[in-house]
Image 1: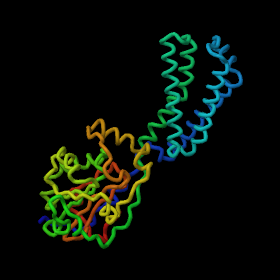
Image 2: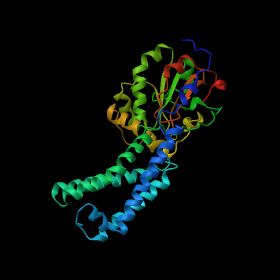
Image 3: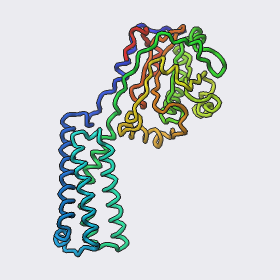
Image 4: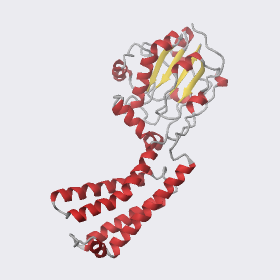
Length: 341
């Protein structure tokens, strides 16, 4: 059996992801985005007020006769003013108000699409149509930029719960009937607790383990998976990543997750804008896809080294997209009292 070093595995260095340069976490950058959002809000408020109060004046400036009843333009003005007010009030907290900002961006995008379609079909004169396009592009482009920056922010970290002392590993059985306790007394076990089986990040984890399986096993550890599905229905996913021969434990109630201090995430931490780019990367670019939710969609994953019935090191995800260094967990684990999360 490979030796395990006694220096602490520095989970703090892996778990605590630094703020990415250029995101809204930077104070100067944050202030610039707040100013930009206030300017967008004021622009839409002024434009909306003009459309409500004096729509004919705007048409005379453009040298156009209004192609619709003035009341229609007044309604559009009211909508623009309401959207501008919402964006202006959202400026101090752009990351928290991403839903409202996204709704405003989608509304502007739809207006652009409708206007361009009207120009192509001849439903509106070219000069008026392109004027409307430019008027919408002025706030849409900076708002789209702010939304992309918000989406690039890492999701808020999650505080793990304490590790429970009485784990009772004998009660957790693999698909072959072996207990986790008995397996850990034969060799150290790298225990990998997965997210729900339909999650793209669960599949990323399986791909990571498959890529490093030889190194992990050469270091003297046996890999054991824990999932929240029924084993017969989960087998196909392990076969997809050529991991069907690895022991796995079905834990539908997530009891072992809780005993190991793995918390449940919030809605924003799972579905918020900080996760968008990671989901797109995993689902589309890396080809992992997504599937039916099998288990608790908010349950956080983790990985631990279990030796002779005791947890001697590990990593508890702070974000569902984290990629632990599984080999480091095996090679440089710490006693449970020294684990730093």
